[in-house]
Length: 193
Length: 193
Image (cartoon, rainbow over all chains, first blue to last red; front, side):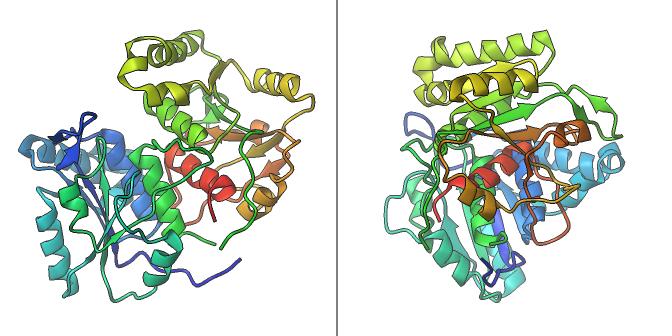
């Protein structure tokens, strides 16, 4: 039951609010959800990730996320609930995917491998087990991409180095919240086995 | 990489809003959170569970949950997003744990085994792998208990047949949202391996 466990120190996660599909497959920018910020930051902290990027091109939305972040990091929230501060230390706001990638390349001295997640896989996928094995190479930065709304657009998926296999449950039902999906995927990739 | 996979058909989940601890270890009833209803219902549907019980002794809160449930099952929400309806079909509202247990015993003809989850384990725990193996016995109903707030009280934990090992990440940080924790635990118990 024990295998070698990869570290999350070179793994980042990005939650994209644009470009994503809406219900009718139109490309939209979704609104930031407060609980996505907190839940995924806490997951990132739990699994020892490098960064959690919240990505939205909308200025007001980025300002909002920054405000939530400061509230819990330096406002009264920091003393009310220090555990949230620790998690939100990993949070970074970005206007688009390219900014995230440039930032990671700048830090790591090499481009991050992009891993796209989603409920539907349009091309060859990599299994969690396969990716977990690859994550043992701690010198290579990875960026896990999650979409909001009805999922990442093909334009984004086309930039992926790897597409992760969708989470399958017992039935064909496959409509998890991004918060729950991120938890399951991080546990599969980096959790205890 | 393949082992025998248990079915979730005899497994239920209950989210308790009372009795739970608050930040200062006082016993309180927490308020129902809309996203807890949806996220965990979608998880329950994905992993083929029998029921998802939302438990609160507060009448108004139970009415609120019923209203959300009807909105998505028979209101305009049902046609707007049929996937939510499917998930909320599993949702049942209950005033307390005893009502849930009586209901399950009534359905299954034998008492459910109670499995308590939480961030801190106060006594001997069972591993996810161990419990997964036990779930292969499809004749035995199981009830997974999750707490809100700062976790289930000792009074509830004392009723457990099993206490599940806490989710451990890379660090000591162990403050996941109940939505993310439920996802990880259901995947460990019932997901593909």
